[in-house]
Amino acid sequence: MTSRLATLIVAGIVVATLIAGLIVGARREDPGEGADLVVLNGRVYAPGGTPASPEAVAVKANRILKVGTTSEIKEMIRTGTVVVDARGGSVLPGFNDAHLHLMSGGLGLEQVDLLDAVTLEQIDRKIRAYAAAHPEKPWVLGRGWYYAPFPGGLPTRQQLDGLVPDRPAFMRCYDGHTGWANSRALALAGITRTTPDPKGGIIVKDTKTGEPTGALKEAAQDLMDKVLPKPSRQDKLHAIRAAVAEAHRFGITSVQNAGGDAEEIGLFDEVRRAGGLKLRVYMAMSVDSPFKDADVDRLDQIRARFGDDPVLRTGAAKLYIDGVIEAHTAVMLAPYANRPTKGEPLFSADELDRIVALLDRHGWQVMIHAIGDGGVRMALDACEHAATVNPVPARGRRHRLEHIETVDPVDIPRFGRLGVIAVQQPFHGNPSGNQLDVWIANIGPERASRGWAQRSISAAGGRLAMGSDWPVVSLDPRLELNMAVNRMTPEGTPKGGWLPEQKIPLADAIDAYTSGAAYASFEEGRKGRIAPGMLADMVVLSTDLSALPPARLLEAAVHTTIFDGKVVYKATSPSPLP
Image (cartoon, rainbow, N blue to C red; front, side):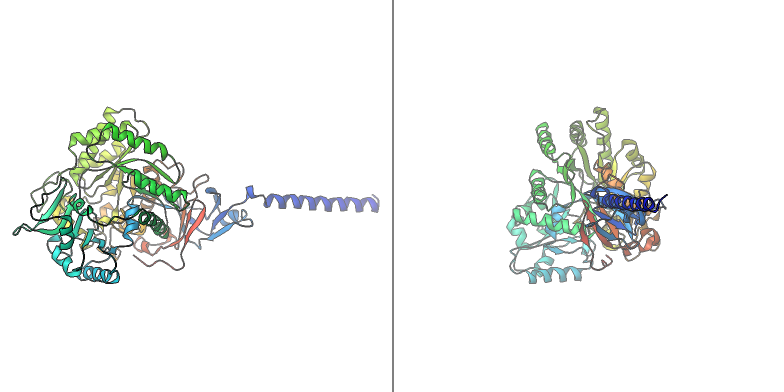
């Protein structure tokens, strides 16, 4: 071979190599091969908490593109790729709160918040401070008080008169089922000693004088609603946006709104169209009695508009069968331990059967608020009746019972057998005196021993989903997970947990707040898991949950929230313990 030929061959190899390099480089810069966002150096959670978890996630547009090792996902970084360093923390599917009231929670952010007031002194201090700070408000409104701090379990108008003497005031209890009015508010509502109890409600009256005490149970609060200042349309739109931001702070990317109407879903849609609904909302439509065929036809028209939008959709109808144990309005199978009543159901058994069967026939998922063991049985009976009269459902039948605070043992296996989802809020059973003393006293220790029986329901084949019921309690999912796993207060009491036989593993609790909640809204095919093709909704925690002892679960704070493939929240400092 001549030297000239050798030189030409070498030159050709060099040129070929350069061309190949350019081609490779072009392929590496091909946006179709890269990621828009990556999460690196984490512990990526899989349903069931499998021990060999991946480390990193790649996202393209609003979908998960790949899950793998950090080195694999780093190869997908391009110019403009957003990089989230998990720093060893858990990477979970975005939390999905399976039961809350989003607009009410947003509106409540502007009112007196009594959720952390556990003594009469603290309640007094917070109401006085709010009233003094807002002299311009014609009413002083708030919510979140507990029954236990008040003698006899209920507050009085005289107590509130002493705190707000110059204008009407009204405070809803933490569970939303009892209101507390001062004398000015009662007068404006026209509530006197001669005012009869409305259907489904009780005006609590002094046993000696007959005068209203200021406590209004259940539907009696509607008498006050007629005179309360009504939030404007702009107030409501602001409340939705504020609630979305609050959800992001806690790693929540999806919610299931437990009740609403055409106006409310229209407001959510207005926020969505303006680009502000960075939260997936599954909204249930509220159903009251009487309920006829024409009513379900109107619901069908709403579902036709919002049936399968990935951000805002409906398909569930919400009913109440009872109230709450603390106010003796939950329906029990036997009388309360300290009062000769079982509680009055809001529907007769025949009417409930008819409505559930009608909704089921039209393909609606039914969500039934059922707290007492009697209410739970009525609701399960109605679901069983619907399956009998409508043997072929319009779509997969996934009816739900909401709350289930106590349940008779014979009804526990029915959840699995009927395919009824148990949607619980474990932190409602927070074993502090404020939340449980009145609850236990009202139903007695035997029925209380089946409080929030998620392990029993799950072990018998029932599906679990979890939520907060915000603004009844905090929106923070850590509180629900801690109660489900440890059955202890955030302060760590009682030692060993309340009813420890009902503890569930951390993986089961996370699943109930993610994949289980997605199943509860017919969306397990697009969210609730971190896997290729799923919507890119994730939360990065400050700590690897699998490395924390269960008792230290609350130390894991939200580091980053990702919704629809974009970072919507990033902590500037660790969140304080709740």
